[in-house]
Image (cartoon, rainbow, N blue to C red; front, side, top):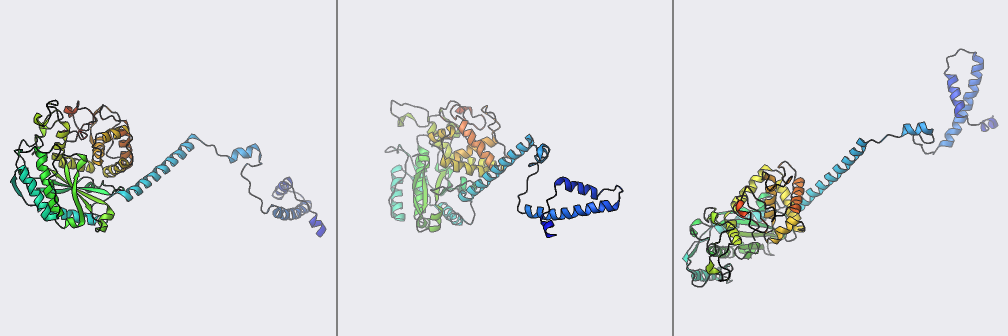
Length: 465
């Protein structure tokens, strides 16, 4: 028995199939012959099955159709259609898009600065204190140019221990100029710019918060837009604002100094940087600027077009004569239209939910690269900044299609990434000199020369450096 069992051979597949067929057959036959052959076959199959099981332990399973001939190979392989390929491509693109959006969210989470948040509560408290000090500025009676200069020197020494004068523009007022100046507390003090709009981003140098101080209309006369008169009076207000802030508790937290807006000597501002002792403010790297302004009805905006000459020939050499003063006019209009610009951006943000995030992305991009043609033109104009690219984005979202640029408009329903990509593509392709960007018609700026970006009011070229 043992020898017989050990010598059993493994039944073939054909024998197994024959046995199964015979076992399940319903054909009548002699039970004796059938039972004997089936019994022997069963015994052989049981022994063979044991050997087969032992022999195949550990064998790897084979794929359908492997070593199975042509028919088996055809049935085991699924046919790949064009729809399958497209579905795979869409899934890949969707994954990459979602991954990029997550990266964008992470980037903005690191660099975006939100007003009235826990992280900026010290900044917000400082802004309230600065506002209170500015509104408490003392009035100064009308003084001659020389008397005003001496007055500021005396006040600065008494209040701060430093002696500084009035940051007059270049050219400085002529000796004996018959101009009387006065100063007073601003009518209104408001935080403007990217910070209240949720567009501020932190760079390696920190971030900037702009505070707008609107000077009273009674300090100015109708023709103060001529011959730097407005800028001389503005400089007196800046000097007295610095005296007030530096001599108060604000001066204990901040280093208070003069600075130039966009490097323009006509536009001095008061700049506040946190002292090292104010650790939490210094850690945020927040710089605060006090920007003087006037109401839109104080200056004759109709006389501030690019072809107007508002610096009379007396201040020019005989060789130069009387020429247009587009940069001078733009600096005047910029002070008078700041609240108008802020209102327009607020309206754009309300109409386009993703506007603020897209503008923040543009500011990050602007801080890293300016190689595109449009961006380089903005840089060459001397007025490149976050405000300018934000206005460009607002124009793309809200302008009803001017300039004949197909596909240049963006939908207010787009997300931040789509708006950002559209704005960057526009800056890469647009020539601001050959194709000026205008809100509305603003035909007066058609032949201004150089890069042109007319503001939403249609009164001034934001790129007139």
